[in-house]
Length: 176
Image 1 (cartoon, rainbow, N blue to C red):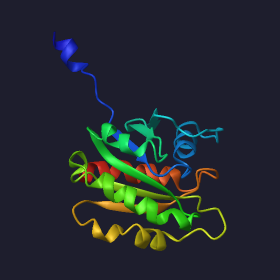
Image 2 (image 1 turned 135 degrees about the vertical axis):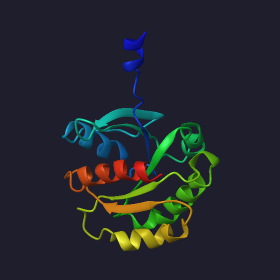
Image 3 (image 1 turned 90 degrees about the vertical axis):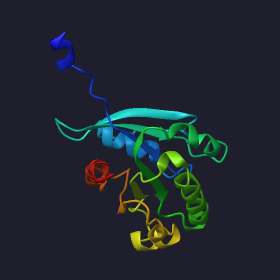
Image 4 (image 1 turned 45 degrees about the vertical axis):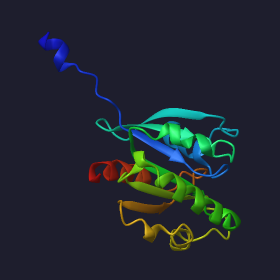
């Protein structure tokens, strides 16, 4: 019996990857997990992948579809979430208001009370992309005084900033 106790299953922390459709969530996840850009299509439902950060740290990342028809279902994925990663297309200024409303609504859910937030401003490699300061302002991140949050720029296609972002996500988990 002692041997069984010492080999208890260690639950991998759950991270939710959410954001509007076409923000690059699946591309970002698979680029980080596999190191290559994979062809993706709009996520219907969710994708789950384990991301290994180092020999001791891995994350179970749930990539949830962001189409308008999927967003009412986001609430079903929240229980047990350790960090919410909200991905925005930093080159799509026209949808920042929609992203701000979606973020505000999901963060108001009781299961996310006090859960750390990481905002990834994706598509930073595209011309005319917003700065992280502009994204932060448009998403009204300063209003979230009830939780630890961070924002980082990245490019899923180029792989820029992803490793640092996921290491920051792991650190946020320990601040919760």
